[in-house]
Image (cartoon, rainbow, N blue to C red; front, top):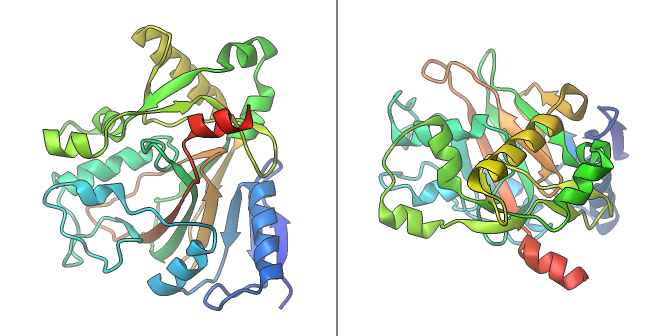
Length: 297
């Protein structure tokens, strides 16, 4: 088989064929995939009937894997055997649909907001890889936004204003935007707010990019109101249709995206009626965004 990468969207997203991710890849093939993710930011690998061990093996070639934040929720009995796999589903440990008021379901509703995976960790995510195992008959798409193209399209005065700004990110902020449920002190302490730059340089493409997420709630040096308004304005600008690709899932799809230069969100479906079982691996970045800026200065 010959690996090919076909552009899907005018700005980003590539469809990769001619590769079987169940098997170990030679160095040349892996290097081609690395170059493709730097160029396209989102890669679609259709027809990949992989299991968790194969997904972990492929993902780990890009770097160390991050455990799922949902694991710190009290009362969350893991459904999947490996901690490296985030359970992006609407199922409990017995593979039954989560109830409408189940804390795990309420927590997961935050995934419908535009976000970047693990920006609420000091060292955030580099890549995420999501494998479709079971999909609902309608709904449940995932939308992606190209934050490099969005940054390029900003007025020069706005880009100058953003230079050097730092926002604080918290998983509990984004979760509170959707569902009001009690979070105890131990859960909050496990994932405290962290600072991240608002604009960063993507190391692979060398392009400047916004770094946004629903997790961001405060901008240092601005009042809370002004910071929140700025973040809302940037998110609205960056998620215009011209910057967005919508992925309609097929069982066997594996989609990989670069969290350093994209946002994404899950779309609604009837989650109290239909199953949606997706398994995600997350590759950790090598340093915090602030440390990366300091190292490049």
